[in-house]
Length: 239
Image (cartoon, rainbow, N blue to C red; front, side, top):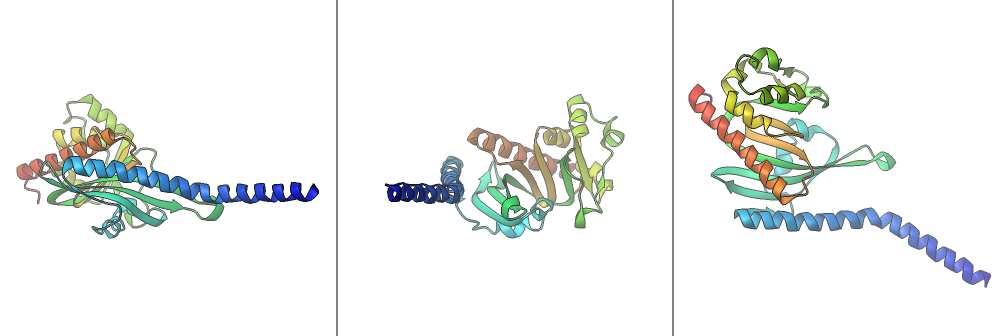
């Protein structure tokens, strides 16, 4: 009888340990499968290409931009690539780790990229609670938005937005050529995200987006920013 009880306890202990060890892995597998279905459906609807892996070299692109410098064990887990309203775009899931062992933390993002075809200065637009640019980006200066645009912006909602989001760049003197009412209004429509303009790309970083509608909205707004920048460049001669 004692032997049976001991065997039962051992089985329960082993089973519990197995569940504890494998549960996070199974959870991530189930989540990955759901993301594949979501991204696959969107790619089909938009007539774009879907991949479970980083087949367009997104990993190398990420390491060259500000937000790609965070954490370690960085990974692109799913991507959609194509053209949307004549603008080359990429949408992908991105994850990285902070810390290690028992202090390990996973960060999950959904990233939206729209191509402008321009050569733009490197600009960061970060929520006010975000840490100021550090490391190789410590030379980026923060724009005094109210001082620079208070008399030029008509919509109070835009001014209010940029009291909560900070703009950084090494080339603040060029922002007047790049930002006008329309561009700033488009930028202010993107909330709870970080925005990076680098080279020819507009890059929007969001916490992992679960809804296909939210993905479509964020992509559409990213594209509107790219189009507004292209229009502005034609007026100001930025190329």
